[in-house]
Image (cartoon, rainbow, N blue to C red):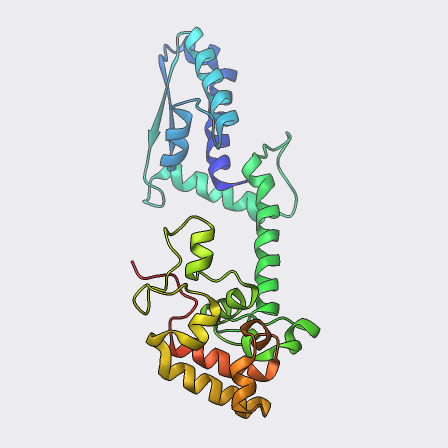
Length: 269
């Protein structure tokens, strides 16, 4: 049982005692029954019957209060500070601890279980499974790292920082925010390159070969690609960008190019 539910349950039990003793209370002229609780949340919940956590117990409390009122006894619920030396509150806390530590249960009726209490193990299980998956699949620096064939096939992008690896895979799949892509999906009025003056369509080919904004980085990229693959300059000039992303030997050159530029990022606002 949740602590919140237990506080409401205690208020309900106090009113049960009052109902059992109502004849004695009437005999002594008692007009008001006072219940003291150190839980402000439980007191606020008992004051209304709106849907939400604790509604069922709040209804039970309300039913018992109306029962007492029908016999001329009003109900008032007061807040007292917990663990502040108040005799009744300290005794209630002591009894609760004794019940918690007892080897056998002293509950003689079926305990109340709220929906939130029932759902908690499910939620905790999901959180634990998620944490276990992340610990197994992701490295400490928030990168992509899959085990088995998927992880060993392209180790460089898979073990790079996540924001850089994400740009690599978006460009590889053709879903990077280039001018052509954004216009196709209605996010821009034109497909022109915003990096070099807006006169040429911004495609992957343009960004990796012709955009004047990244000329120096492009030279370094293709020089490194040639060294990694053994290609001559003519081969580098004619290779398709889509092919570039399929060759593992080119991964480091491409990742360095992306790290040195803003290719694959959304346009500046």
